[in-house]
Amino acid sequence: MACSRLRMFAALLSAAALLVAAPARAQSADPKAAEQPRQQPGDAAKDGQKQADQLAEAARRIQGPAGNPECVWLGERMVSLLYRDDLDTAFRHLDLYDRFGCPSGHIQVTFRCLVRQNPELKGSETLNARVHACWVDPNLQPSAAAAAPGQPATTNR
Image (cartoon, rainbow, N blue to C red; front, side, top):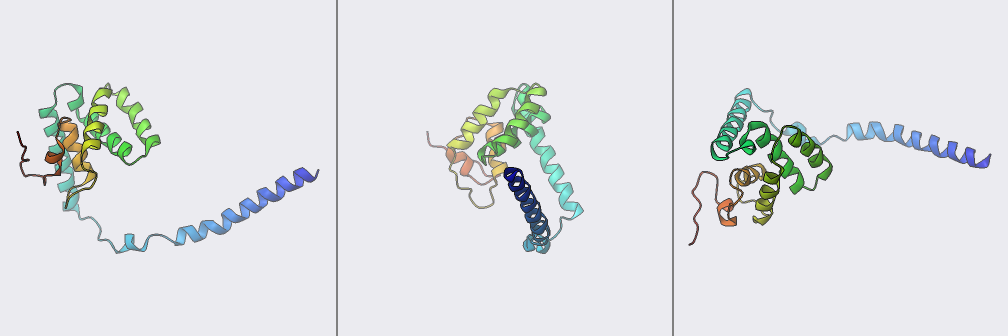
């Protein structure tokens, strides 16, 4: 009898804590998010064109199913999630990736390429750009990934 009362008290206490904490969390939204300028329609079109160009580049440079747009799109996101230690979401992407018939070996070599690179991003380089570079060329050398996008990489032979 005392045990059931204790459980009931604990349940009520937990419910009360959730009710008190919910409005406080809703009001403590990130103030910097409101200050950031909204994306203009022209910016969205540029981003869409950039993504289309990246998918076309991957299809041109990669032979086989790893160059298919759905494999590139899912694969790059999965490698990025793995790199950021979001394993649960990455494994959900892996299920979709396999369902589309994409080669799982390409995930492995792309992730290996990404891990070999210098972990610090240089200047305007983004993780997505580095993942895309490794996806298109998994044998990319670390010095080549550090080069700014659009500039040819120099390699010593």
